Amino acid sequence: MYRYLSIIMVLVLALCSSIYAGDGNIIKNKAKQVKVYLVPTKISIDNKDINQKEFDETLKSALKERRSVDFNVVDNEKDADYIVSADIKEYYYSESDPVDMITGAGAIVADMAMKENYARMIVKFSVDNAAKGKCLYNDKIIGTITEGVMPYKDSIPKMYSRVSRLFTVDFSKLVQ
Image (cartoon, rainbow, N blue to C red; front, side, top):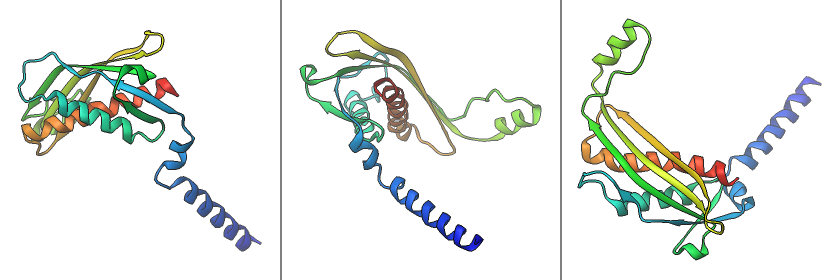
Protein backbone atom coordinates (compact mmCIF):
# COMPACT_ATOMS: atom_id res chain seq x y z
CA MET A 1 0.00 0.00 0.00
CA TYR A 2 2.72 2.47 0.99
CA ARG A 3 4.71 1.48 -2.06
CA TYR A 4 1.85 2.42 -4.43
CA LEU A 5 1.17 5.61 -2.54
CA SER A 6 4.82 6.67 -2.80
CA ILE A 7 4.85 5.90 -6.54
CA ILE A 8 1.72 8.01 -7.04
CA MET A 9 3.25 10.88 -5.04
CA VAL A 10 6.43 10.78 -7.12
CA LEU A 11 4.40 10.88 -10.34
CA VAL A 12 2.31 13.81 -9.11
CA LEU A 13 5.41 15.76 -8.06
CA ALA A 14 7.11 15.03 -11.37
CA LEU A 15 4.08 16.22 -13.29
CA CYS A 16 3.76 19.41 -11.22
CA SER A 17 7.46 20.23 -11.51
CA SER A 18 7.41 19.78 -15.28
CA ILE A 19 4.51 22.23 -15.54
CA TYR A 20 6.19 24.94 -13.45
CA ALA A 21 9.86 24.37 -14.26
CA GLY A 22 9.67 25.56 -17.85
CA ASP A 23 11.26 28.72 -19.17
CA GLY A 24 8.60 30.97 -17.66
CA ASN A 25 6.54 31.31 -20.83
CA ILE A 26 3.54 29.75 -19.11
CA ILE A 27 3.38 32.70 -16.76
CA LYS A 28 4.19 35.31 -19.39
CA ASN A 29 1.66 34.04 -21.92
CA LYS A 30 -1.14 34.49 -19.40
CA ALA A 31 -0.03 37.99 -18.42
CA LYS A 32 -1.47 40.96 -20.24
CA GLN A 33 1.00 42.99 -22.20
CA VAL A 34 2.09 46.21 -20.49
CA LYS A 35 3.32 48.88 -22.91
CA VAL A 36 6.10 51.06 -21.50
CA TYR A 37 7.79 54.15 -22.86
CA LEU A 38 11.25 54.86 -21.42
CA VAL A 39 12.15 58.54 -21.24
CA PRO A 40 15.91 58.93 -21.87
CA THR A 41 17.62 58.75 -18.49
CA LYS A 42 18.81 61.96 -16.88
CA ILE A 43 22.26 61.91 -15.30
CA SER A 44 22.51 64.34 -12.37
CA ILE A 45 26.07 63.52 -11.41
CA ASP A 46 29.41 64.59 -12.79
CA ASN A 47 30.91 61.28 -13.87
CA LYS A 48 31.96 60.84 -17.50
CA ASP A 49 31.95 57.04 -17.14
CA ILE A 50 28.19 56.89 -16.55
CA ASN A 51 26.59 56.34 -19.95
CA GLN A 52 22.93 57.20 -20.49
CA LYS A 53 22.45 54.94 -23.52
CA GLU A 54 24.04 51.93 -21.81
CA PHE A 55 21.86 52.43 -18.74
CA ASP A 56 18.73 52.77 -20.90
CA GLU A 57 19.57 49.57 -22.82
CA THR A 58 20.12 47.70 -19.55
CA LEU A 59 16.78 48.93 -18.18
CA LYS A 60 15.04 47.98 -21.42
CA SER A 61 16.54 44.46 -21.24
CA ALA A 62 15.56 44.06 -17.60
CA LEU A 63 11.95 44.93 -18.43
CA LYS A 64 11.85 42.54 -21.39
CA GLU A 65 13.36 39.71 -19.32
CA ARG A 66 10.85 40.07 -16.48
CA ARG A 67 8.76 36.91 -16.45
CA SER A 68 5.83 37.81 -14.24
CA VAL A 69 4.77 40.74 -16.44
CA ASP A 70 4.97 40.96 -20.22
CA PHE A 71 6.60 44.39 -20.58
CA ASN A 72 6.72 45.73 -24.12
CA VAL A 73 8.96 48.78 -24.53
CA VAL A 74 7.42 51.08 -27.16
CA ASP A 75 9.02 53.90 -29.15
CA ASN A 76 6.65 56.74 -28.27
CA GLU A 77 4.47 57.94 -25.44
CA LYS A 78 1.21 57.71 -27.43
CA ASP A 79 1.47 53.91 -27.62
CA ALA A 80 2.33 53.45 -23.94
CA ASP A 81 0.31 52.46 -20.90
CA TYR A 82 3.06 53.75 -18.59
CA ILE A 83 5.88 56.27 -18.92
CA VAL A 84 9.06 55.51 -16.97
CA SER A 85 11.61 58.19 -16.10
CA ALA A 86 14.96 57.64 -14.42
CA ASP A 87 17.51 60.06 -12.96
CA ILE A 88 20.92 58.78 -11.82
CA LYS A 89 21.58 60.66 -8.58
CA GLU A 90 24.72 58.95 -7.25
CA TYR A 91 27.46 56.53 -8.19
CA TYR A 92 30.07 55.56 -5.64
CA TYR A 93 32.94 53.08 -5.97
CA SER A 94 35.48 52.05 -3.37
CA GLU A 95 38.26 49.50 -3.43
CA SER A 96 37.46 48.73 0.20
CA ASP A 97 34.01 47.70 1.34
CA PRO A 98 32.65 49.89 4.15
CA VAL A 99 32.20 48.18 7.50
CA ASP A 100 28.69 46.78 7.73
CA MET A 101 26.41 47.35 10.69
CA ILE A 102 27.03 44.01 12.36
CA THR A 103 26.55 43.17 16.00
CA GLY A 104 29.44 41.61 17.84
CA ALA A 105 33.12 42.55 17.89
CA GLY A 106 34.21 39.33 16.16
CA ALA A 107 31.93 39.91 13.19
CA ILE A 108 33.08 43.53 12.86
CA VAL A 109 36.75 42.52 12.95
CA ALA A 110 36.13 39.81 10.34
CA ASP A 111 34.31 42.30 8.10
CA MET A 112 37.13 44.83 8.44
CA ALA A 113 39.73 42.18 7.57
CA MET A 114 38.09 41.23 4.27
CA LYS A 115 39.36 43.05 1.18
CA GLU A 116 36.37 43.59 -1.10
CA ASN A 117 35.39 46.18 -3.69
CA TYR A 118 32.14 48.08 -3.23
CA ALA A 119 29.83 50.04 -5.55
CA ARG A 120 26.59 51.92 -4.93
CA MET A 121 24.20 53.59 -7.33
CA ILE A 122 21.11 55.64 -6.50
CA VAL A 123 18.54 56.20 -9.22
CA LYS A 124 15.26 58.06 -8.83
CA PHE A 125 12.51 56.39 -10.85
CA SER A 126 9.03 57.65 -11.60
CA VAL A 127 6.15 55.93 -13.36
CA ASP A 128 3.25 57.88 -14.83
CA ASN A 129 -0.02 56.54 -16.16
CA ALA A 130 0.21 57.55 -19.83
CA ALA A 131 -3.55 58.00 -20.30
CA LYS A 132 -4.23 60.01 -17.13
CA GLY A 133 -0.85 61.71 -16.67
CA LYS A 134 -0.96 60.72 -13.01
CA CYS A 135 2.26 59.81 -11.17
CA LEU A 136 1.88 56.29 -9.78
CA TYR A 137 5.41 55.69 -8.49
CA ASN A 138 8.20 58.02 -7.42
CA ASP A 139 11.03 56.46 -5.44
CA LYS A 140 14.80 56.14 -5.17
CA ILE A 141 16.28 52.73 -5.85
CA ILE A 142 19.57 52.11 -4.07
CA GLY A 143 21.65 49.28 -5.48
CA THR A 144 24.86 48.03 -3.90
CA ILE A 145 27.37 45.36 -4.87
CA THR A 146 30.25 43.99 -2.84
CA GLU A 147 32.69 41.63 -4.58
CA GLY A 148 36.16 40.36 -3.87
CA VAL A 149 37.51 41.56 -7.21
CA MET A 150 35.48 44.14 -9.09
CA PRO A 151 37.46 46.73 -11.05
CA TYR A 152 35.92 50.18 -11.37
CA LYS A 153 35.09 49.79 -15.10
CA ASP A 154 33.34 46.45 -14.44
CA SER A 155 31.32 47.87 -11.55
CA ILE A 156 29.37 50.36 -13.66
CA PRO A 157 27.50 47.89 -15.92
CA LYS A 158 26.92 45.65 -12.91
CA MET A 159 25.29 48.57 -11.11
CA TYR A 160 23.14 49.37 -14.15
CA SER A 161 21.88 45.80 -14.05
CA ARG A 162 21.35 45.72 -10.27
CA VAL A 163 19.37 48.95 -10.12
CA SER A 164 17.33 48.07 -13.23
CA ARG A 165 16.35 44.69 -11.83
CA LEU A 166 15.40 46.17 -8.46
CA PHE A 167 13.18 48.69 -10.23
CA THR A 168 11.49 46.05 -12.42
CA VAL A 169 10.47 44.15 -9.28
CA ASP A 170 8.75 47.27 -7.88
CA PHE A 171 7.22 48.13 -11.27
CA SER A 172 5.89 44.58 -11.66
CA LYS A 173 4.08 44.85 -8.32
CA LEU A 174 2.57 48.15 -9.41
CA VAL A 175 1.03 46.83 -12.63
CA GLN A 176 -0.14 43.40 -11.44
